[in-house]
Structure formats: C-alpha cells, structure tokens
Image (cartoon, rainbow, N blue to C red; front, top):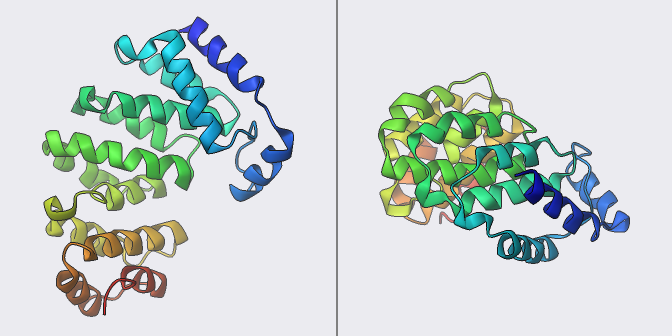
Length: 221
C-alpha cells in the first residue's frame, strides 16, 4: 500500500498547479488545500494510476482509503471515493461503519454527496442497514450523517421508499442548517421526476423551509 500511495503522490505532485489551487480552495470555502488538479485531468491520472498499479485487481483495501483521507489536499479524498466506487459491488453492510467514519471526517458537501449513493447501493442489497444504521443517521447530531440519510435514495427513482424519504424529511424539516434544507429540497426535486403528484402533496401538506420548498418544487407545475 505504501508503494501505491507513493506512486499516486508522485503522479499528483508532478501535476500540481498553484494557479488552479487557490480558486478551488476558495470554492470550498477554504476548508481544504488543493493541488490544483482539475477534475478531467484528475480522472485521467486516476485511470493511469489504476492501470499502472493494478490495485483494482487486489481486494478492497480500507487502509489505502484511510491513507488518502489523511492527506491534506482534497484531490486525494476524491480519488479515495473513486476507488471505493470501483468496488461498489463488493461492499457489504459491514462496511457501513467505515463509510460513517469517512462521512464524519473532513466533512463537506463534495465528499458526503459522493458517498451517499454508495450507501444507497449497499442499502439496495442489504435493506436491513436502513433500520440498523441509516435510521439513526437521520436523527444524529452530525449534520452530514443526516444529509446522507436524506440523500441515500437520490438515484432510486421508482425504487424510492416514500415512507422513508418523507419520514427523514419530516424529522429534519425544522432544521436551520443550510445543508439540511438544501438536501431536503434536492431529494424532493429528484423524486418529483418519478412521482410529481406525491411530492406536490407532501410539500403542500407539510411545513418546510422556504429553501426546501423552492428547490423541491422546481419541476412541479
């Protein structure tokens, strides 16, 4: 793992761009430093890294992910999430505590919103994790776990459980947190593409933050 980490670090350091790094940092409200590697180039470097090291042919390595998570520059966390995504079919409910650790460490919308669909894929195969874990996240003190709970069904379309979606939203409807209000609106907007009548009825029948209503109503007539 050390060798693979060194290879990736060398690859990224060679493409470091301070001119790009500063605006990227500003965009993330100065929460994280950046190497200045924009997404298209980073994805190209990831492909090169995966090909050269053949790391994807080895079993999923939590240690590699954690090592990337400890790196200062944000690009390393993005690559960690790319790596996790490559093993999406291999992830089991036993990985939920691991993902919870990632969600609650170096937390910001960019990483959390990329992990939420991974949680969703596990929940599809192992629905028991909803009762075992995600229900607790929906009322957790940690805002980012709440956001993940609201968003984990974002790509479910017709497989979305309205009961769970609306239950989690109702639990957080009074939240003053921008990222919770935004998540509620986003989840409603996305589900409205599948069942607009249901979303319209829910919005009209519940007291939600103006931001949530505005976002959730974008595709409603």
